[in-house]
Length: 221
Image 1 (cartoon, rainbow, N blue to C red):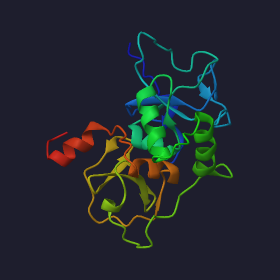
Image 2 (image 1 turned 120 degrees about the vertical axis):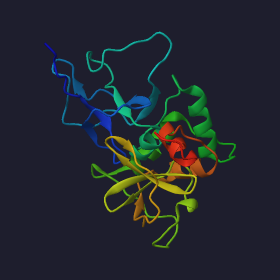
Image 3 (image 1 turned 135 degrees about the vertical axis):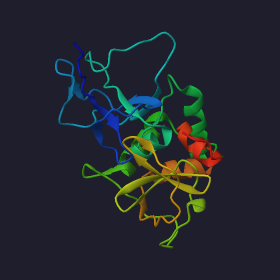
């Protein structure tokens, strides 16, 4: 007899929400311990640490039973752009090279390099306001800001939907993955925190889902 396993509530949307869906992601991560291991369900709080991390799904020979122990709660993201939009940053332990690159881009050539705690403090202020996800103003006053004016990996919002920018195009995020680029998008705001957008503009290159490259090349999914 087959058993239908309901997905756990551990997928993160670009809006920072943690939902239950069957979407497969490229990255895991965490916000501290926010689950009950006995029931594998979330607690009421959605973070217990200001260090919201983006981690590698595979790290050496380590394997974790998701939500099984009283350790950090495993969350999953479609790709790094989604994780950054939700307010996370690369982990200095399992993704050290990416974390160092992110921090260097964040510093923008300054001799003063921020600590991990300083990154977290800024991101914590930029990602939420009174417990709600912050939508930041567009960097341009133009209502029809072209995607080319936003760095790759930025996630904008339009008509209640999230769109990841890549190669000057908008790709709609959905529970089943990205859709083909949409040309007539009028962005209303940016989900990605401003400091992260600045890091993207300064040269940090997030890992995007391979479907985006397929759409850009014209190859079938």
